[in-house]
Image 1 (cartoon, rainbow, N blue to C red):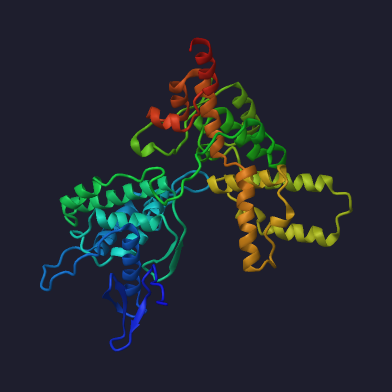
Image 2: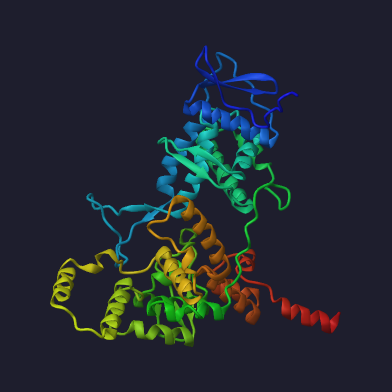
Length: 458
């Protein structure tokens, strides 16, 4: 009986030449030096092209005029992006940080990391290809690779283990990739015809791709959100309630300062010093109603105008004071000495003057673990083996999906409530969106109201 043919061609060694090769449609294709990064990248590209049903590229003719390569485009765009997608770094008081030359220091925005994520596979698959050769076929190949698990290599040689991206994430990333080629057209690194062709490729559609679907972000139930308040510090509990009442972004609630709140008339108006869409010259004003004003009044008392309302350092001091108050045994002299030494070292030096999105999210997650009783057998322990760590991680992921929530879902909750109370336009203004489509994304339609009307009129 004949041996069954392998579905995926095997990476082989050509002993006489030392090159790697594979068989594609009964033809031997040489990949380059066996074990080299270039040969493995070419092998991965051919496998991805076969999975996408793309015919292999023709071999370039000798003596062709050198053209800009994908590597050249990536390096040029990255030099541009590191400046364009950056912002002025701020210190703990919210003031710009100056460098040795007296100029403000800039730090990367989150968008720069998004571009880095899509440029890694582009470079891995097509670094040596000229930009003129790149077409929809290669973009489809790359898109197919993003929808499947794999392993890529960065420019510094380190490996990146890729987990399949969801359909919507892939479509967004492909949009960023088109932008890179469009930028290349303005620098004469990419023929305009290539960019026009890439724009014609339609996005992935639901049910017509192997890319997984990610569940839509739903508004958190208000009762569920308030259930964690007794299990978090006073600062985080207030921040979460403010998001439920105002719909502000997590980054906006983290940087609240007395100087940014106009208290001359009601409702109060909070104008964040920095916000997500400020580079589009959009003004962001958040209105604070009576419940919101009641929540933040205690944090406004005896506070400097430029100091942040919600401080991790302040929360840590309050936590230690509560522990000392609840102590039942006598404090030993050695403990007093350790406390004095810790005070000299400034124990709060590792804590910032304000929360950021990540620390705020972690506090909410810990609150969910305490409020909804995460099982002890799925918590990570120092002596866990790699296999146990992986198993526990998978179980924790499922537990978080069923029990925990993200602070951003509180923004969705407020958007939905505002839409039900005053309509989509009211929700759009309060959430700070410039388009109705984005406001619809952040708020759920009032299905119950529609059902009642249909039952009455239909």
